[in-house]
Image 1 (cartoon, rainbow, N blue to C red):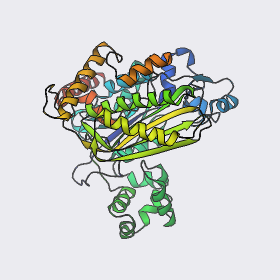
Image 2: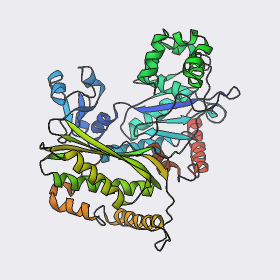
Image 3: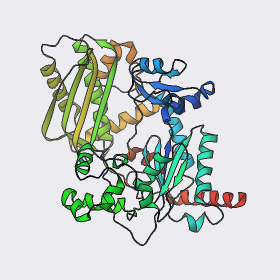
Image 4: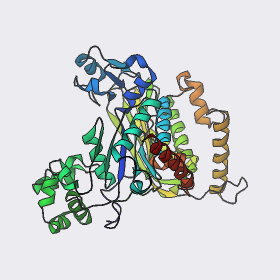
Length: 459
């Protein structure tokens, strides 16, 4: 998914936008506690890697007090917190709990924009007219958080402000809990906060701002806006407005095509047989190409990276003259890269990474007797996807996938991928279709009205 710029929408002086950001606290660790009540009150962290004991991918607040943090080796976490609990990840359960959390959130605002498995934005701009007459923003948000904790058993934090960026900063400051940056208080709230806290701010821009003496938003606010424009262009002007509390950003639900698709898989054991590793790479390539075609995309560039047991790596890439979507052409390119980079190698393979980028639209109408290869491939892939959805992922396989299943029993039930679902797919599941993501907005507004009446009755 493409990285977001700081501000992507025009300044609005007429509407005082109110955007709520909701974020699951230590989401993976909190999910494990929700799945096992015996873990309540204990220090918990979730381990990654092939056996679930590699590096820490999430730790709850109790574990963080002992110094356990993301990216740390699990054995180091155990040394720091001997009585803590290491949990192997259960990604399918994380997806399920995430869906339940978003089902609660979608009842409380007419527009919901999920941005990852555990966080999203809600548009509260008109809530004072329809919902908050008999309550307050704080009580309303507390009701949301309490309901998610009660029904889904997940703790969440939230921030309310006049833009999505500021709301996210407020959430980070609130954890655990809720903070509202009231209209007119934006500059004061930002004054002493580091610019490094801004989501999406790269290291190069951090260094450039530091060279200007701007370590905090207060420093940025005191700089001449013309200097920031000269240094950073329109982004500099937007940053100056943001730091001075003058940026009022509406929340828009946008569904964008992905810019890249990739797979990063650690094999169940270090594989000394390079032909077996190639078979797996071709199987993964076929899966990714199918995903591309389902999203009506094709790739102009691809890469393959092999990591060995000693964590050294080799890799290569290929650029097609025209964007491609056919398995035969893409698999041939992957195999050619594999044989080029593996010549003379002798170490067992630990991990295989495949990536497609520079994507273009692909028009594949599912007509079985289509006139073009694109139409026929689209129909074939659509039919295979429906069969696998109905009868299981092994119902229809390519030769490479079948060979892989026959070659190694451990691949018959492949480990679930880490569930960072692109925003585009989450929006489609929650709201409607790619073509019209707001198709069911009226339904949510009716449900919102129902919630409003319930709150008025309570208060």
